[in-house]
Image 1 (spheres, rainbow, N blue to C red):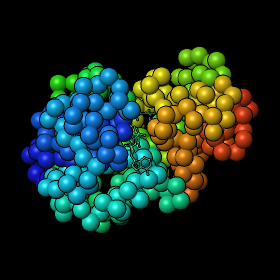
Image 2 (image 1 turned 30 degrees about the horizontal axis):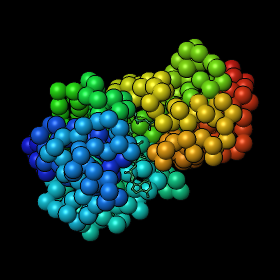
Image 3 (image 1 turned 90 degrees about the vertical axis):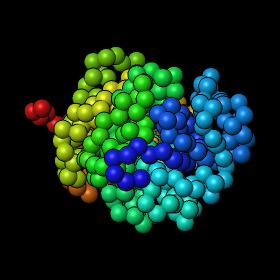
Length: 338
Ligand SMILES: NC(=O)c1ccc[n+]([C@@H]2O[C@H](COP(=O)([O-])OP(=O)(O)OC[C@H]3O[C@@H](n4cnc5c(N)ncnc54)[C@H](O)[C@@H]3O)[C@@H](O)[C@H]2O)c1
Ligand SMILES: O=P(O)(O)OC[C@H](O)CO
């Protein structure tokens, strides 16, 4: 897919909550969409009953949306390939798909995370594993809780790509009466915002689980935005990106919605559940912040950036710090100006 023409043939790899929902958006926008599912029975049900009840219960999928568990068939002739798998498995998934990628296809990451061990953003992982230039990689990120979009509630998002024409083409391919994408070329800012907001949603969830109210949430959201913006500035992002849909927009949606897996996960920790107990309650769906809190913390340390909320979330998730002492640690920090 090149130039400013809408993509007509789009493949979505991953039929989880967001992959299925984004495939519906693309199909509703008039694109010719094939959705790849890991399990044959999921693909079969989408094709015959137009449903994916394990991930988007009660949602009628467009009849034009085709699904398959055959990656070769899924990717044949695609102008854009959308990667809708968890951040920490993207490298492994994409390595398997790499030989099948159509050479000039725009590769679109939906994942919100930072890879453990390499500390790479998802677009960096995609460009490296697919062996394509960075301007062939795009990202979609914003306040995009899948179930609300699947219910066709009005939502905006950001399509980011360093190649503006590709961003415009993808924007056209996913614009519907209920889904309004904006373009942006600040890939670094858009991706960091998407990864960090999951960590802040864990923190807000913990606060909710402890019984704290809106002052605490607003304090965490605002200071979470401050530390995310600091990291972004150190990595060359445009600071204004963090005030946009993929920054403040997604932060507010994720930190305040009971639909967020990250917020829900944090709430369980705040109520005193262990990591394993909270994990059991996710129905197999991914709460990206649980792993990304560690990679973001490490990335910040490499760049000499202070991220106190991320630090506490990491310690609660992985170093046995209780949420109450975690809150005390944040409140007890050295006094400073805003
Ligand atoms: N659900 C949302 O509301 C939403 C919105 C925006 C962005 N995202 C991001 O999109 C990405 C995917 O999220 P999702 O909500 O679709 O996740 P999900 O847990 O609902 O689905 C994950 C999908 O990846 C597939 N998969 C392939 N290989 C896998 C492996 N090795 N391990 C686990 N799953 C594997 C699963 O079969 C499943 O179809 C995440 O990074 C998430 O942060 C999600
Ligand atoms: O359910 P979560 O916490 O993964 O959040 C989903 C989306 O990223 C919200 O934009």
